[in-house]
Structures are given as C-alpha cells and as structure tokens.
Length: 436
Image (cartoon, rainbow, N blue to C red; front, side, top):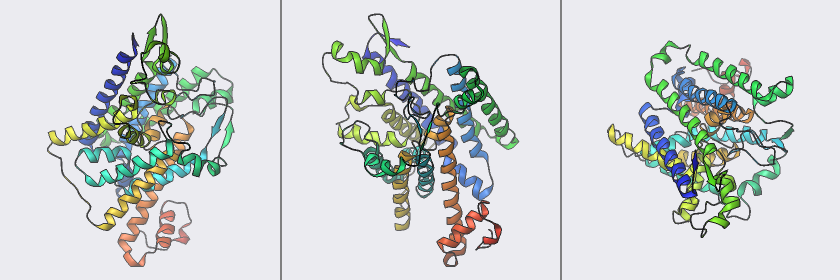
C-alpha cells in the first residue's frame, strides 16, 4: 500500500485500525470471548470452550503470519541493525539477542493474578467499560498510569520506572542467544536448514497440530460464538500486522515506510512539526493488538490535549475496542451500569489493576499481546509469558475457591499448598485441605 503523502498514509493507517478494532470490540462483547473466563471455565468446570476459542485466535494469526512471511509480504524478525522489527520486540533484537526470561515469567505471573482480581484482562477491561462497568474504569485508570510511567511511550521522562526499579535486577535473569527468539529460526539454526523454508514448516506443523487439537471437540465445533470469535480475532491480529508493516510513501520515486519518512524526510518536506508522530522510531514499528502499553499511551494522548501527534496504533485500538463493545451493548440492549458490590470488591479490583499494569509491561504483553499477537510470531518468550499468565490465574482461582469453601479453616498457606497439589506441582501427601 503506497501513498503519495504522509497525511494520506496516516489517515488510512489510523482509520483502518479503528475499523478493525471497532469490529473486534463488538465481536468480543457479543461472543463473550474472555481469556480470564477461559482459565476459570477450565479450572472450575473443566469446560474448554473459551480456551479453545483463545487458542484458535492465536492459531489463525500464527498460520497467517507464517504464510505471509514466507510469501515476503512482511518480515517480523529484527533486520540485523540492532533495532527491533516489531513493537514489542517479540523475537528479540539482532546483534544483541538477549532473552529476558525473568521478565516473561514474573510479568506473566503477576498479570495472571491481576486479571483474576480485576475481573478480566486488559482487553476484557475495555469490553466491560463499553458495556457500562464502572469497576473496569478504575482498573483502566490504574493500568494507564502504571503502564505510562513504566514504558514512557513518548520519551518524555528522564528515566522510566522499569529502567529505575526493575531493569537493574531483572537483567540478571536473562541470557544471550545467537538467533532470533522464534521457534522457526531456532530450528533452522540447529539443523542448518534454509531459514525461510524451516520457518514455514515449523509454523505449519505447530498451527496444524493446534487446529487438530482445538477442533477435536465436537461441542466446540457446534459453538458458533466460540469459533466465530477465534477466527475474527485471529484475522484482526493478522490484519494489523499486515497494515502496520506495509504502508509506504512514494517520495520522488523512492518508497519508504512512515517510520523512515518521519525520521529522515520530515524536516525537508513538511512545513512544520505539527502532526509529527512522537517517538515514531518506536511507535510506528510493525505491531498488532496488545492492550497494556497502549492503555498507558492513552495517558500521554490525553496529556497532550489529544494531539494527533500522540495518536498511535495503541491509542486508536483502545478507543475502537471500547466503542465497538459499547455499540454491541446498545444494539443488544445489554448495556448495564455496574458498581462495586463492597469495599472488598473495590480493593480486589484495585490490586488487580496494579498487578496488570506492572505485570503487563514486565511480560511485554497481555493475554492478547503475548497470548495471540506474540504467539503468532512463534516467539519463545510469548509462549513462556502465556504459560506464566495461565499459571498465575489458575493458582489464584484455586486459592480463592478453597478459601471460599473452607472459610476460616483455610489459611492462605494451606490453600496455596492444596492448590499446588491439585495442579500436580506438589506430592499428594502434602495436601492440607480435602479436594473440592
């Protein structure tokens, strides 16, 4: 997609993402697609329907990315210049392939706990706001402030919170790799095979296996909403990758990305800096749906007086998903104002928002950002974060359930140990409470 001027390119970029986000928000609300709900259904009822929908979304996006990369429609691996290829850098940065496993594990675990306390992940928070949930506005505001100061998306701080308080010790929980962090690149390096072909084979094998496992359930195959949600969200993630990686400008016969134009040509061609995207070298990288850092970007957008210079993919996707959810809530007459049931409810949502804010940034994504967009790149870190999120959420639910059933008889320690026994992480002889 080539445009003659920056304004036209930017307009298409923003409106296309807004349209996809609007539709995605409506579909998620309509189908009750929920990643935290997927874990809850599995842990509490043994129901895998929504978990399969979540996996289907990731698989559709994964297969699409695999084919698009093989066909040369985009490349989500770092170009070898010490610069990331995507936002966030799912596959790492060439010349310095540091694998920050500590961030993925800690961030995912904290996020999993937070989304359980906060009644849903970052995406679900936006959906609930669109449906009239006041509690989710509190969660949104907490994530917004924390993510903004953790990331500093517009480079307005001397040092962000991650650099000041987390990086000094989390950097120790990492190691160097000699290759991109995706399974395809790792396999090609191990076997000495052609990179493009190996990535295609690995992607098709993983995607095909997941599709087989997902559709083995006849109950899932009969559930239109779950299948529809998985396909639509997966295609939205793929569409976002394609759009953000393929918008170019034709400047005197030379084609360049919007990011390159802002960095190298803006001063020579544009009359002023009005409308110039802030921190374009990062914010105009190819990207797809993720919601924690973008929620933080909305604070920068608001602080700027809603300047178009601060209107990023992330900001427009947040707005689009909320409005899409609102649209469906009004159409279906499902819009309901919901307030806190008690001070305990308020406290739990507060803790949930705080943990999701910190955890989502540390883990470089949420259940959508890492669990679908990241998984679509076959990045090892995305799978590690996803496992950590699910573990954190499932463990929290187990503990809550035992404390609910046994009330004062169940201490936190006994509930924790029993939950770990249930999850086969401790021997059965250590069980403190009867299974429920």
